[in-house]
Length: 212
Image 1: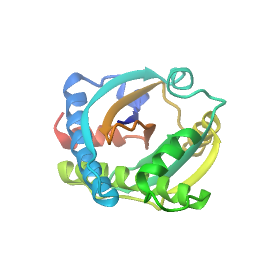
Image 2 (image 1 turned 180 degrees about the vertical axis):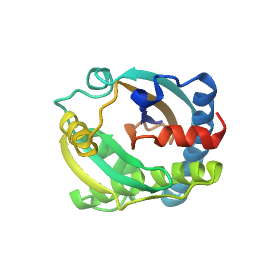
Image 3 (image 1 turned 90 degrees about the vertical axis):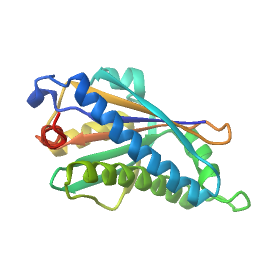
Image 4 (image 1 turned 60 degrees about the vertical axis):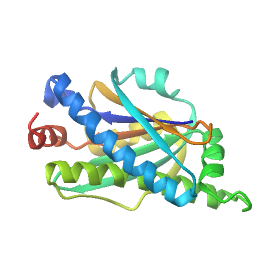
């Protein structure tokens, strides 16, 4: 079983913590569609069936991120790319070294010699599939033009990566919206996390375009 957590950073300062159940349900539907598209694409690449379970959404304080999702001092592989267009932000795909090994075994042919370069390529490819599948579903729903930059991989402490992103963006908010998806694949399990940190006003624009 492949278990992936998709976490969307919420602009609670500007939204005044007013996300309601209708908005959450709308996000669930979009993540479900995007995740289904991602599972189909991954299945085609590895020539094995990959299925997805319906996501569950939770709200978490920012400080809980370190203690609940990933310890602040724990090194991770993180793939990041920026979203441009009518609405923007930054995606961050985060996973531990142990998970990298399992994921690489899923993504690459069984008889190939795995190198660090191939591991990194597999991570980047998976993140690219997931992010673009979500963006395609979102763009189609709200008729927005949203494109992602070329993914970049970094290996560092999770807290350092997140802090650097917030410093670069010049914003810090109090809560996280955690969207958990489960992908099923040959009994294997991979725990990863995808975070979306929106630019100011992005989520308001998305919800308004969705009519919720």
